[in-house]
Image (cartoon, rainbow, N blue to C red; front, side, top):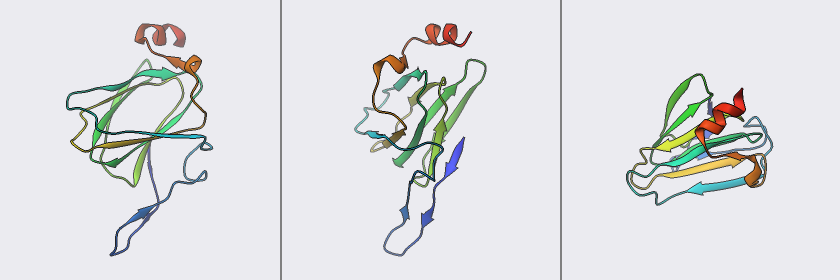
Length: 127
């Protein structure tokens, strides 16, 4: 689900705000991907419990979401829009433009036990 962020327009530059009320979970962790080499893919995992909110703060990239039944591709290229990723959703990030920056907001700190990094294991976990 794409969520539009508030956009405050100003001749000096635009500003968007992310607060706990803006996205569907409390913010506990923020990280970002940058300098992603051309042709590189990121993601390739699901989370058992964690949700995520992904924003292309610069440039563009595709996010492929798969819930085990349906696969959808989202092209993120606007810094005032983000993609909400529910738990138990396989995600892949591809087609990074030069200079792209991918910001990810999470409701929990890093926990390796929450990751499913094998697609077949993900499908089995869903059953």
